[in-house]
Image: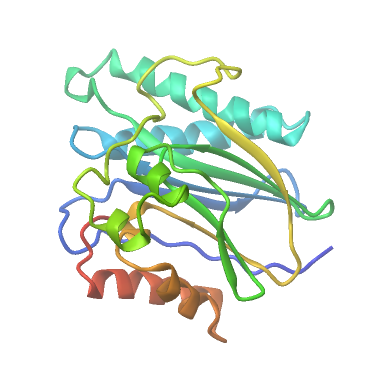
Length: 241
């Protein structure tokens, strides 16, 4: 089995009073499986951090309760359950009627060299290998899509006034696991000597890809890389969590 180094953290940033970002980073079932999830509460409405907390708890509880099955299918089911639990919780608090979140969830199978991803919204999964930073998830947002297909440069997308608009979220509508317009799901080969980065737009809207690469390429610990990325984002304005 390969050796892995993992670390995660979140920070409120320089402009927000509360942190609507959350993450999961833990072994699940056994030493062969690692669950890594980044969650960002949808801004502009009350309860973004509540939606993120519900998603965290639901995903862990679902996977713990149902450990048997094809891994990507289980992860899709867990995220769908999180979505529907957020919908259910809205019934009990009118102030949170519009709460939702976006997330990227990964369940890594070390012995099979697999990284299973389920993604909704504009959080991101990157791989960094051979000096190349590759975005593995696809932004469910108009501006993110335009950047991906080359209609907007990275710099133009970062500063676009509609940057925060999203097409999909977790908790906006009831979903079944097979709904075509909800989950993006894919399994990737886990590369040797690669770094995988999960982050919210609070990071990638502050740092250019070249700046992220400079940190990931440094010969420092995973904890120090995480702290450096957060520190640089805050130095450049820290507009979001």
